[in-house]
Length: 262
Image (cartoon, rainbow, N blue to C red):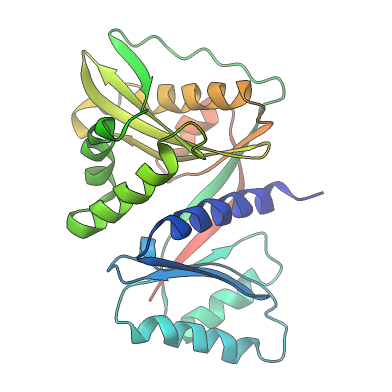
């Protein structure tokens, strides 16, 4: 049976494969020891090593050096993820630092069992949540998500394009939701149904509407929809600031994901 930390990792791998496959500017690579993707875009979100295993292999050190060199040769920023539940996480951290990568931060990976989950979100007056069903409605998503994630110009265009391809249509693997406060778009969230696992992504609230419970309400709504569709567990990657919000929904920290930037 797959562990919960590994389930969080696999959900991220699956959504990034979908995103890579939907964008002509991104390339997904899966080999026995590594899962990664790359692009011609100048942001580490679009150039990333998601997972590396087999550090004990005879050629592992040269393989890691070769991968890092490949990304460095493009002169574009890239990130390498190190998962705390991996048996060789401490050794990989040392190897990455030897290759000149710098630890830039971390993200708690969290999970929530949906078997008997219920949650009553605090009422937010004049707040309404709607699904994004048409390309014309993606302007709401762009208005909120792109500033929140610092994606401008071609980075924002690429991010919007993959979310449109994957999130619009009857059989789309992603579902985007937007929350309106007093008729104005205030927050967004994306849900990724991956078998019985529901991945929560792109939780963002416009700056002027923060600290009103909008992110929590949107996340709870997406979880209810996923639960009704058959999801047994929800997973996400949080910021340190978001941990308390997700704990209130019932999530628990399961793994720490360290980010190394090259």
